[in-house]
Amino acid sequence: MSLGLVFLDNDLKQMFLTLALQCDSVICCRVSPKQKALVTELVRHDGHKICLAIGDGANDVGMIQKANIGVGISGVEGQQASMAADFSIAQFRFLEQLLLVHGGWCYNRISFMVKYFFYKNFVFGFSIFFCNALTMFSGQSAFQDWFLSLYNVLFTALPVGVVAVLDQDVKSINRLRFPALYMQGQRNQCFTAWKVTLWLVNGIIQALLCVSVVFLGYSKYTDRENGQMVDIYTVGTTMFTSIVLIVNLQMAITIQYWTWIHHVAIWGECFIWFMFLLLSGELPHGKMIELHKLFISVLAPTCSFYIIVIMGTVIALLPSFAAMSVFRNFFPEDYQIIQEIERNDQRHVSACTKKTSSELGLELTQPGINGSAASLGFKYAHSSGIFDSRHAIESEVESSREFDSKDLTDTRQLYGSHKSRSTPIENIHRRHDDSLSIASFRMIKTRSSSLCRRIFFSR
Image (cartoon, rainbow, N blue to C red; front, side, top):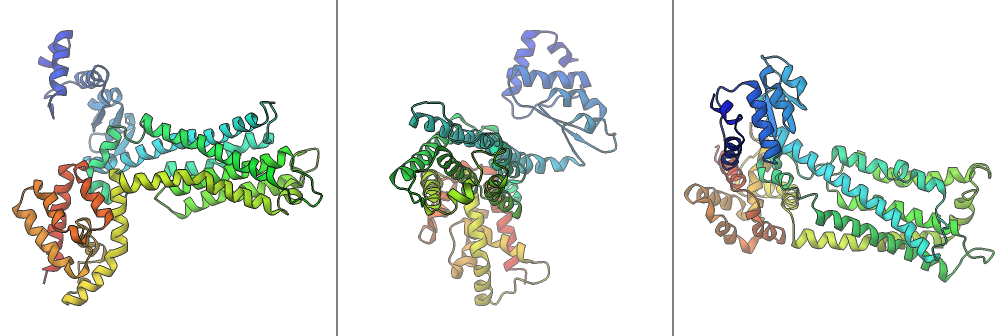
């Protein structure tokens, strides 16, 4: 009844919205399906918020349809909510996995896909622009018409599609252990104007460097048997070869998650381009006038083609690679810190487990303690800057006791006590630990402390 009166008066409705947005949680009891939808619509449109609605019955359908994202629970109350929702789950507890893991992955994939699409078209488009500038804007295209048609369809399409479907910035277990990583989607940190601009500027720089290397390389000397200089399509084909390699290798140096599908997609696109050159050169002269025997008779026999392609690719990728290295080592983001922790865990946990078990006579392979549990037991030792295997267990136990007796605000002091044994990566982690939420640290500490006690003191 009260909620019904609120929606009859615009002033009361705005007061209710202002009060609700200042609260951590708002509970509306005994509301009708229409009122659920009205509250959701009010917060979405007047509050300018992205809303997620979750329900399990027919009375939640209106609320689910009004929200930006609807999640339906299929259960004893029927399938109406699931059929009206964008996503369907079997139990409410699966919402954590849906949001923190798959939601975070999906946001990163879409953001990267959009930025990469703009980038690779900037590389191709500005290479045409710079070529026209060098030819006094005569309008003569250095690329054959098939290159323009198949660039986005055949030569660069597969890698970005694979990454948009399969990419993972960090493992699912770490996304659950560090819920603060989900905030990069809420704050839109992966698709800011600054990051989009960086990708576009990178595309322009790579196009300029590629065109410059190709034109300078072919203008200095010729290694043709008849002593003639190269024609415009020889230059254009060499340049397009560099562009295809640059765009695909840029994907390779950017992503951190690799499967056999990624290898097939990225290296397969480069292979497809060279196969296209071979096959198009064998077509009748009337079908491919500019490309007829171009690769086999003109490009492939000369060393200048390979030198210019390799130099153009390396020089164009060098600024991007250097900038990525600087940002990753000195200004890392939260997910990059977690990636380094994962790498160090994989690199050191096996050796650390063997040394500590042999020195202390502990059998970590006892029933119920498998390899993954032992790895998790050492995870916190590594994330706290403890890489000396001799001190791993006693430092872990000491850390566990300190967590029980001290407040979370002493975390920096605990990291500082192990500064002498920390690595540069852990120094980065220590400088950026405040970017992760307090709840995330409390969760990982509680889990690691109890797990270490179970592993090391079970006997």
